[in-house]
Length: 217
Image 1 (tube, rainbow, N blue to C red):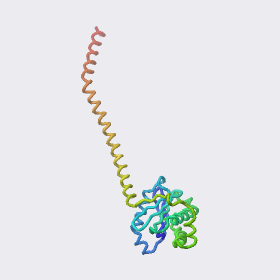
Image 2: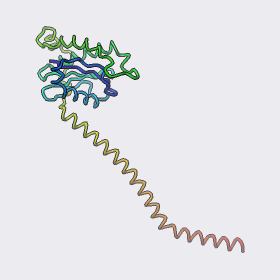
Image 3: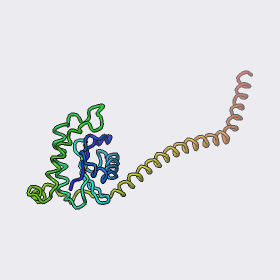
């Protein structure tokens, strides 16, 4: 079953709305909601538009649409097709209701908390996979969920940290390389001065002496 739902802006991970859960669900999903926020921070407009991320007893399913990410946390045995159809329903209604306000400057966190009413009503429709309407959705060829990428939360977080570390090391190497080139250039110039400086000075003095003698005498 769908346990909870969260909606955020992709560009800055600003939370826009979330389902209001009872105390038991809050305690049960406390760690997973923290993981969901980490996922939001790692997403960007180049991320997969649809993805499932496995973590412990649950699976995160998300879609990205019009710069907004819609994420639900489901039990592992809940059908993926229903999860993504549920998210599609949310995305259509959310964009229809608030699409013009998503990028509004100064938007506060959970500015669209009232969307919870629609989320709760829609979630109830998808809770029981045995209802006729949900069985119909499962058998309809609405989307090929087998093509949707599945990731592991640990791999996702580790890969993200690794990419961050690689980026930091890359920037450090670029700075060190620039400093090395400058130092090498200075050393080469000093070597040229030491090698050719004295002969050049002697030659210049000689030319001045010759010029002075022949010009003035």
